[in-house]
Structure formats: structure tokens, C-alpha cells
Image (cartoon, rainbow over the protein chains, first blue to last red):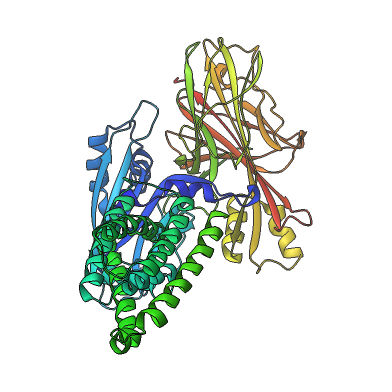
Length: 357
Length: 260
């Protein structure tokens, strides 16, 4: 993460209430810990004001209007004096940082030149907290550590900051594991509608080829619309998608009552329904949120999780009924027909319910 | 009475002065002048960007009247004004109160540094010398800017700030060897007793100090050259319900002295 990503300016507005208002200056301090091993403190402050204070502390006369390049040399030359009024400590033990000074010229005739002072060094092993003090400003300033902010007066010590608050973004493996689980649970146990659709597909025919062809068509289709929706290339509102998903379940279940063999147009229909369900998955995934840094990982693993959930539904149905009963004479009359009717009734009810929302 | 006091920067004071620093004290007619607000000590200051939560009044007054200073929130300089005609302009900034809490030792030292003897005596009388103190402080800063030639017909003006320093002569017409009379008012009445300090940008550690007489007046013989800051602090017990023990008012007046 870069310093520029840390929003400090916006926090100035958080200091409300007239009687509690502080005299806030232009100094800002940001603290970063890299991989628990390197600390980096960045101070942005008015270069001329700092140079004047350093010169006065050194007993010199006040300079008048030094240009940016001369200010930078001047600040670096006062390094030892500058160190007298800063304090960095880990668990109460002071550390001596490396310090780099840079000065950017003012952006216009009325603005001040800004000094960026970077303090870096190794974090002591097993350090638990960090304390900070900056005595070169008379005004209040914001100090940000990760996403946390403290308001400090000049020369006021910060409270000890726990180093664990500066956490690294989640790794690819943990993101993959998380979204795999989210995809699976979106079907089992939370997605009863998707479970019934998959059951409807399963119940059509006792042939393994029938299940395989339909599931493949469905998977390819929902992967396409899930991806397109997540990248923002298509957007269909849930008030349209959700009732249509319910209708697709009812259709598949009703067709099971009249059909017992896989027809090519049935595969086409399942593919079309897959496109619908993919948009439904996208709606759910958008609600869960995707990490910017691992967008593709999260998208792919969520889709794989959804697939695993569907296969689990089919495997369970096969083990509970298919394995024992699929070849019995009464399988269709006592299992397929009543189960499909139940699915169709439920889905019809959902269709009405979702249309009225 | 005139006293000379030397303060060293190696012993930072606990309370900070606040003053107005225009980008020029001698603008041309029609010129737009940036006005910086500074907080610090010994005229070593940090910028105070424009903060709408703090500003009570931020204005410029000339012979034609008063105008608010325009500016962008969060920006330094905090305000701008345009010089409409030659003459003396009075820039003023008064703030809403800010709260600060100091431990007993720090507060006692600060009261001593600022010459607030009455506050020290009251704390001793109340047996509070060992107690921490919470204070609400407000700023009442002014600056005198001259466009064109100086005239004794023009002078500083009262802006009506709670605590206010008013120059009773136009400082831009002062000659070497002449005193500048300055009057301190609190709620528009002369205030007797407070310590008034004057310091110059060319040698800020050398300070002229005096206490106001019964008419709220001090006289300073100012050396020519450089920007002058004259300041005074007044502290009173806070009224009930203020959520603080004390209230302080910080008056300041800046202007530039022409070289000899």
C-alpha cells in the first residue's frame, strides 16, 4: 500500500463541535509497518516554517524566502537538531530511524513549500506497540496508523499503538477458501430455489447421460452470466431475474411430468435458464462483496463453490433415492411425478410471491 | 514602565501565540492580499488553514466599511481581500473557543509565563494549585495593513472583539524615538493590569513587556524595521456549565515597521 492511498485530508472534517475544535495545522503524519519488519513514518509539513524553527534552535538568524532546493539541503543539514524533538519507540524503547528529507516547490505564488520527511528502520523482534512524539509543530495534527487516526497536539506523545492494527490484506489462498465456501453455502443450505432446480434436472431421466448433459449446459451458461454481470457488462435488475428463476424451476418440474427422455431442446432450455441463474448468483456475490485485489480469484472460486453445491445436491438425491429406486417400475409414478409436482407447486408459489415484491 | 525579557527557544512555552501575517503589509491599490493565520511562539509559526468550525469573525475594515475575508476551507492562506483604495486597513480574526487540559505543573508554569498573576492567586486561594486545569481559549487577532502613504488622520479601529488591542496612533507614521500607545480592552472597556508583550521578527527572543495602566494603556518604543507582534492574554474563571475551569482570550496585533 502507498502513502498516497491513506486518506488523511478527509479526516480533518471529523473534528466537529465548536467548543471542542482544535487549531489544526497543515502537518500530517502517517505510519506504516511493512511485513512486520520495517517501519515507515512519513511527515508532511510546511518546509519554510520547519526550517525557521531549526535555524532558531541552532541560534541562527531567520532565513528569508529560501527556494525549495535550498530548503531541502538546509533541512538535511539540521538532521541532528531535528532528531531532538522527535521520538519513536517500540514497547517504550526509543529507536533511531534513518531520515530522508525532500522538499516540493509550492504549487502557486501563495502556497507554502511542503517538506516530506521519511523515517524508516527495522521493527524490533516481537514488538507489540509503537509510540510517537513530534515536537516541531505548534498546531494540532492527524496521525494515521493503517486505517486508525489519532489527533495530537504538537509535542504530545501518542498513546501506544498496537502493531496488529496495521494488518496486511488477505492472501490469495484465504480469499479462495472463503469464496469457495460462500459459493457452496449459497446453494446448500441457503439456496432452496437452486436446489429444487437441480433436483428438477436430476429427476427427468434415470440415465446418467441426461444429468451430465443438463448439468454441463447449466454450468457453462451460469458461468457466462455470472462473469459478465460481475464485470458490469450486463445488468438485469433482480425484480426481473428472481421471478424468472422461479418460473424456470416450475417449467423444468412441469416438463418432467410429460417428458421422460432428454431432448435436444431441453438442453437448450436448461442453457437459457442457466443464463438466468448466473445473474442471480451475481446478485448474491455483489451483496457479499468482492476484494479488489483478488477479484478474479474470488469470482472463480465462488463459481466452483456453486458447482460443488449443485453436485452435492445431485449426489445426495442419487444416494437417497436413485441408487435404490431408479430402476423400479414405480420410480416414475411414486418418485418423479409427486416430487416434480411438489417442486412445480413451490416454484409457482415463489413466482407469484417474487412478482408481487 | 518598559521591561526587557529574554526567552530561549530551548524551553518551549506551553501556550502558543496566534497572529495574522498578511502576505504583504504594503499592498498596491487593487491588489489581492493573502492573509495567513499563524500559531506558535517567538514568531516561529505554523499555518492555521481556514477552518469554518473555528472562525467566529474573519474580516477586513477600511474607511468604506467591513467585508468578510473570502477563502477556501482547509487552505493556507486562510483568507483573501482586495484593496479598494489607498489607506489603512484593519484585518481581524476572532475564533470560537478551543478546549485544552493541562496538568497542574504545566498549567502553573503557563500562568506564570503569561503573567496571569491574578489566576495564580485565585488558584492558591481556592487550594487548587495542585489540580489539573481545563481551559477554553479564544483568539482575537488583528493586523494593520497600509496601502499608499501613511497619514495621522487614519488609525487602528475597534472591531469589538472580546479582548482587543487597539493602536492609538497609526504605527506607520511613527518616527524613531516616538512611543506607540496601545490600549487593551475587554468587552469594549479598558482593562488594567495584564502583561502586554511586543516582539519583532528580526529578533523575536528579545521582548518588550509592560503591564497596562488604569486606563488599559501601555506605551512601547519600537525599533524601526521588521514585523511587530504585540500580544496580551486575559483569563477569567469559566461560567458554570462551561465544562471548563477557565476561559482565556488571546489578543494580538501585527504591523510592519518601516526601516529607519
